Length: 206
Image (cartoon, rainbow, N blue to C red; front, top):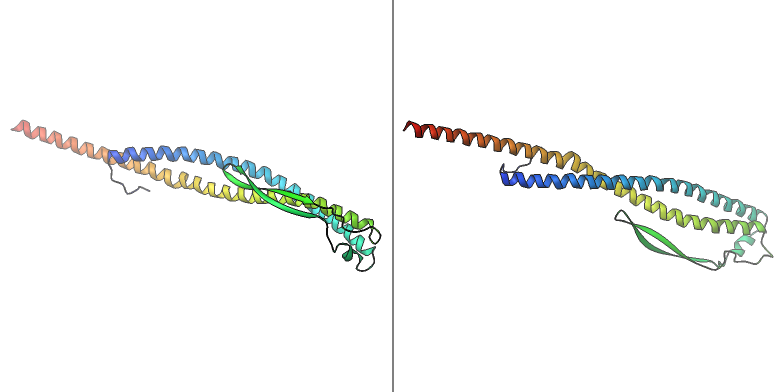
């Protein structure tokens, strides 16, 4: 599409500069998109493996917990877990990936996962809590990486839209407009040359 611009040499120079900047910007954005995609695909593999690990650890904790309940007196497990001793607080910081600020989770842990005496409980309950404690470590890591993947995917989509806008809209429009102005300027030069030749002929006749 040809832009609505006066076909002058000044506009032609300005459009050439815009085209140069647009082409350079397109290359930079394309490189950024490629790097974002590389990091996104690498992290997707990490998240997949980590999610499988979390699901296995939670399943292990649940199986041990079911065994603990079935081997204990009614209400004994609930009573044992009534007053927890372990506390986890979360601090969210940030790091940069290709000018994108992604979260970094830092946890502060205090206390012990076992919050009961051993007289009224079973070994299966201990195993369940230890498995849950191990899963909690993986869950924090998974949450951080899944959020990063989501943000990278959004940034890839935004960058792709900008790349496509430059590649399929702005750059072709600038090129078409530059070509149009060149044609107009050539026509104007030919028209001026024709007028000059006519003027010369008239002067010679007189």
